Length: 465
Image: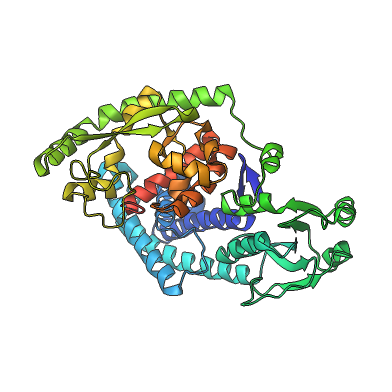
C-alpha cells in the first residue's frame, strides 16, 4: 500500500483509478478523432478540444465515484455492477446537458458526445473485466504471513476477504499451537504450527511482510525469530496497526494504552488548528448567507405542518467535555421525548413529521449547525457531538470513549461516512473505532476527503433516519 498524507491507499486501486481516467480520455478522444480529426490529425484535433475532452473525462469519473463504482466488495454481483455502470452513463449524460446549458462554449458536439458514450461503455467494461481478472490472479498483491491465529488474526482476514481490492495476499497463518477450528475461520489460508522457522517459511513463500497478530504476547512472543526476520529484510507489521491501515478504524477492543501512546499520530499543530478554524469561519459565514432563502423556506414548512419551535436545541458534549447548545431544524413532533426520555432515533420513527422525513433524508435539518461552526462550538469535520445522557453511559462501558472529546465535534465525520446511523451501544462502539482513527490521523486532506464523501452520501440519501 502507498501512504499519502497519513492515509494508506491500495497500490492496485490507485493504478486502476488513474488508468481508467486515461482510458476515458482516450475513448472520448477516439470518438472526436473519427468525427473531426481526419483532416487535421489527432494532435491538431486534441489541441483544439482537449479542455472539452478533459471536462467530460472528469465528469465521467465523478459519476462513477458517486455510483460507488470505485468500491470493490465481495458482495457485488455482476448484474449490480452492470446496472450501476449504465446508471453512471445516464447520470453523466444529464450532468453534461446541464453543463452545456450553462457553458455552451464547452459543447464538444452532439454526435461526438453520443459516440463518446458508446466508446466509453466499451472501454469501461473491458477495463473492469481485465481488472477483476488481475484481482483473481492476485496481481500486484503483496505476499504476507500472519503470525497468530486468534481473534485479531481472524478480524484481519475477514477484513481482507470483505474487500477484494486490498493489495495483500496472506499466504499462511502461523499458530503457536494446534487449535480446534470450525467453519474455516482462516478463509482458506493454510495454517502452520509452531514459531521455530518463521523466516524459512516467509522466504519459501516469497512473503515480504510478517503481520504479528497475537491476542496474547506474554510468554509466547517470538522475539528471536522476528528479529532474525527483520535483519534479513522482511517487514514486520504490528497486527493492530495493520488492521487500522486496511479498515480505517481502530480495533479498540484489542489495543492497549501503551499501543496508543507509542503509535504514530494524534498530531495537533497550532497551525493546522488555526487553518481549520479559519476555513470553518469563512465557509459557515458564506453558506449561511447563500442558503438563507432555503433556511427561510424550511422554517416556514416546519411551522405550517406542526406546532412548536422551528429550531430544535439540545445540550451536547463538545471539545474537552465542555457542554454547548446544538441547533437543528425540528424534524420531530414537539416534546417528542416526553413519554420516553432520551432515546436514539429508530428506523421509521413515528415521531418524525412529514417535513422532517424530507429534511432528514437530505440532511437539511443539520444546516443550523453552521451557526455552531461560526461560534466555534463545532468544526465542519469531527466526531459527531453526543448528548450528556448517553456520554455518561458510554464512557463507562466503551474503552477510550473519553478520547473522542480531544477535538472539536463536527457537522460530519469519518464515522458518518464509513458507518450507517447508529441507535445502540454496539453502534456507538463501532463509530468510536472510526472516530479514534480520525483523531489519530486528522489532517486537512482527511477533512477534504470526508466532506467530498459526505456530498455523495447526501446526494444519494444514505444513512438518515
